[in-house]
Image 1 (cartoon, rainbow, N blue to C red):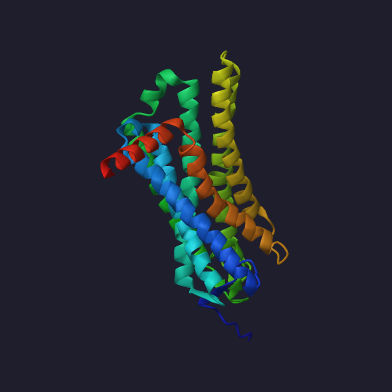
Image 2: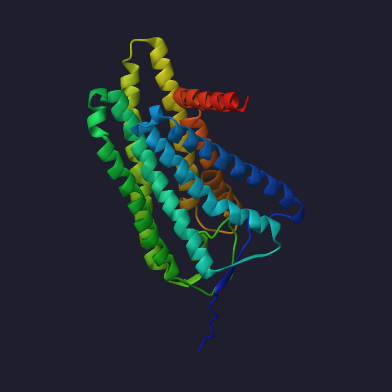
Length: 311
């Protein structure tokens, strides 16, 4: 009878980097993480403190900043710890906990980006119905549903991963405890996992992407009919930057998930994962919030009031 050893602890090796590269990588990701958290906190604070920004659009921007902080915090602190350690070891329980928060943030972001695209569609294409469609009650229900869907989906996904047993190796090459990387060292339970992750990609990946794209296509159609060249350019500039971030997020996330698992693709997989889980949470508030004229005006007003009180 074959003797099989099952592992209860894992070693995570990011980037397969040389020891002399680790200080640079640590500084880089520390800067990205701290900057991302800072600009998201500033965005939340400005929207919360200025009552003129208490509208559906800015509520969704505030929720996006909260989700982005959760997203990057699920990955980057652990990655920084790995870069400071010679060997980074985690228990399976710690691994599953990280997967839960990562998937919760990922699913919530997918849903929220779709909702934000629909919000812009209603504001531009159906402005007379905006207050009725996105009423205070509906926004509250959307917020509650967003977190419930994110948590329930993540719980189901994490339970599926936890049913896998690991005997092929106790080492994965990733920047965090990645479920796809775990399948390469799993002996059992991968069949159910592939079914669940296929549904995840179909519903939260492709579904939310198509929903967002349909909204932006309708917006572009309306923009083309705007007679004022200045107004057309202003709206198109805003939508094009939103689309660029949307495409960056879905292209890198989709590539990381759909890329065939192999030792040759490990590094590329980690780079894509780093882009959508650490860089996108930094870019989102810069493009969606701080690039917005009303948010910038409120920020300058709050800073001016603070300076005035200190004099």
